[in-house]
Image (tube, rainbow, N blue to C red; front, side, top):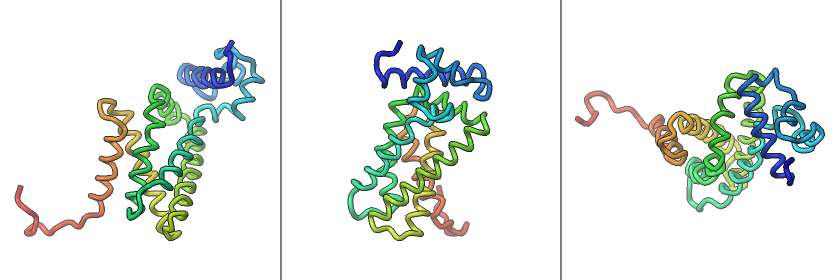
Length: 196
């Protein structure tokens, strides 16, 4: 039996992930998750409101880290520069949890109800990021656009990181934000392009 609340929570998360991989999300019950974790079902519900939330446990930590990093970013940066700083630092939450993050993303990708929850969580996180930018006096429409763009860019980087474990998440975040800037650069007419 787990000796502490944190240990029980960790074991429940791992048990759920294993069962979702083995049987699928829909065919796994909270009782089975609890049994595999060595606790009773009541303990499961003390930690999680439903079996979907087991896979989204770190979202609150990521949101708190992001909003704090946005507040702490150096003055004088444009909104996307602020978000690059914030996502690079907050990304450590994901890097520290890679053994769980990789299979978690695979389970979510193949389960419609979890994809729906992932989208809802992403929307809530995007709104928190936009509010953190507003607190830095970024106008509403720019804060909203930057938050949506920044979150999509970070999400793209996280997926690339899962696919390419040879490079760090930080490297993928830098690449994704560089690519974002490339998308907005003007294209020179053919006669004006420098020779390579």
